[in-house]
Length: 402
Image (cartoon, rainbow, N blue to C red; front, side, top):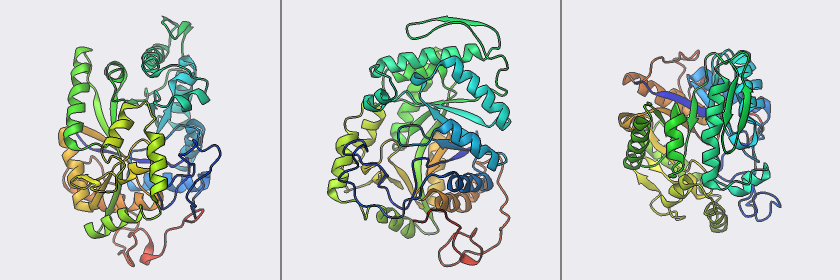
């Protein structure tokens, strides 16, 4: 079982800080009480293409593209970026409650033909009723998971290429089909920590995706989903979503992590925690419990730092350390059964190079990667503390500047 590495496309904006472009105090509508943020990089196609090309060159298998009010549309953005890359796959996040399952099946098939088979699907049921209602979805938490179960059943039925009928509580389909089914069928990534989510994952997921909790908690979650899947006669693979700060020395990595907190005053953290605490997502509540809103003892497990979750929803932990230490932690999760690692860092362009040039060779030396990308600048020494991919230590070409 090899490790599959994936990166992240910041379609809501990027930069050198944890403070998002939008406020947590009012959902980003009035944008009041926002800590002034300088140098935010807009998620324009040119900048995102830089990140996608870097991920492609550095050997990442795919890139996760988020969904939500504050992001560019994942389908449109990634199909455009597919024209700027050669082999990179796109893990497209989408909400099943706001689109017809037969239309989604058709879109996936078209996407596969346009990109020559580079689509992966990240099904996001949704844990925030306020966000869901913006898109016209008024179901409660457990009902959303029941609908997702039906949604994915219809998608698979439509992919059979012959008329498919379905009668459920949320969908009634007569003769649904995709005339030209996708080839290959895109794998379905699915996450959820609630009792309602587990059976849906067991019946539908190819890869169950969890946020970066300490190894013992991840081990328990894997056992839970694996047991449910066995009852369904299925086998599910596992992935983990986290951030990463990897440097040539552990001291430098932790200094970088601490700098990310420099512009976070107590009011900003408190406002973020208050908003995130209202989430219906069990996974989000588990993330919040890792740090309790406090800056104290943010290293919750060796090299696992919960500082990101002070202000960011969703994945709230980062692997922090030198390249060998980060590889150690990845190897530890891999030994538990985790195959897919969906990673990110601030800023996403530079961090892709730090990881790709530092950690990837470590993983390859341990026999955890099937293929290792060759760098066109192999042998160029690092200088002035910059990644070796910047020739002679010159700065990387950045768009938007921050």
